[in-house]
Image 1 (cartoon, rainbow over the protein chains, first blue to last red):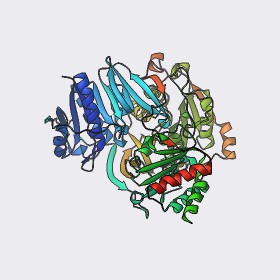
Image 2: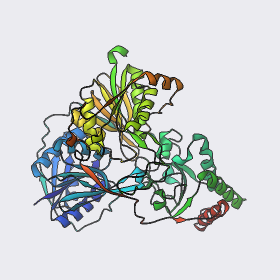
Image 3: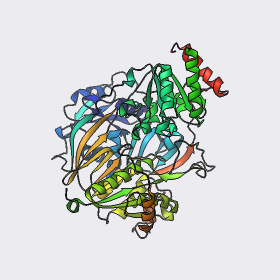
Image 4: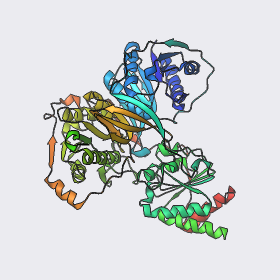
Length: 325
Length: 269
């Protein structure tokens, strides 16, 4: 029986959400194409994970090796290319995460297996693999097909497929000997590093006034600070503001920053790339102010204002202060 | 450190892309591309940081920076910017046959251009703001047979290796050591890209900008363009609306009053 591989992703003793999202999508595809769903688990002392994965799959292939303890794309690539060459799965799913971005392209190149990255959908259509991806910061979708092949690799965007619970399937757990004979000599994991926490915890705020690229200049920042102050809220931001050094990194909302769930989230001049949206979409009320009516942020927001932020924000601030007076 | 001994040959790969973060995008009639007539093109944001990191390393250790792009003649403005910001040489890879190349085919073109050049380090952006594959750099490293690190947020040169920080999710980073030669794909925010100076622009005019095509690189037509690609674009479309915000309309005062009402109704002010 042919297989669909899902590469389990874990870090610091935890299976990451994207693993279960991929298993859900993988299960749907395996049922449609009558293939087995196989989880591939690489790591060190990760047998506990194998049981969890077996509940959701036909089988788990586990490679347990101290050299796989911390993610190293080169080590992972060696093990995976062996497994894929031997078992020839028509499709291997990997998360489009820091882990997958570092691993999938070199693996695909070595195997000469066509690769599509950051996909929000994937399907077999008459032997051909078809994917949907987003381009131009989520403003446009692309439906694309991959060159005909016996084996494809696809990286799936995190937080796109909802992980579903299933009745435990009791898949078989098969240990595969590690092909690694020595440490990777040219790339070495040293340690994890976490920036020290700042004085403001945006995850604890009830009201966040969040600012993005649309603010244009550092000198314009006071207009959002005034609004936040009027509302008794805290200023947070999207990635470009931290990249430019206008706010410290602990104010960043999104995949590489914080996940927030305030009662009120006002997105100002934020276009709404998925990396940002996945960090704030569970806020109670989202109000977006952006001059581009097609900005993806309006698909995440409850209320929208299509207008120049430099006009709306000061007027809004005045109205709030008036109401308080 | 001794500058002579540590001098580095640095290659930086850049892409000339439309700025779309603040622009309204429409799909062109064929449905396979977007309308770009009204868009401003510039160096890809991630590559801008890669270029700055390349120039910073050169200033620290001595050496030379070569900027390379695959693209049409218009991409010269991006290469000129690289030269004005401190790159020493520029190479544009252009051929009718390169059109329609996906990330894989683009990496193959870059590979042919780079494999015979001297280099200690290759810097690229982790991804491009247009097609967002995040793929070219890692495929290129694999084709060259050198190690890579993506999503790089910090680079510290050591003796014969680099100590780098990689951005993971949720504010976490990992620290790695990677031997040279290596490819580092940087993440935005790693440095503060400098402005182009008048002096820089003047100097850039004197610098070499070489153009190479299919035959110069020893490539065959079927290896590049659509034929040499993994991916074929079938159709581009504006994402379907699953949920849309209720758009508040009216003058500035009216809109502001509506927002205040919403906030009040939730008991937040």
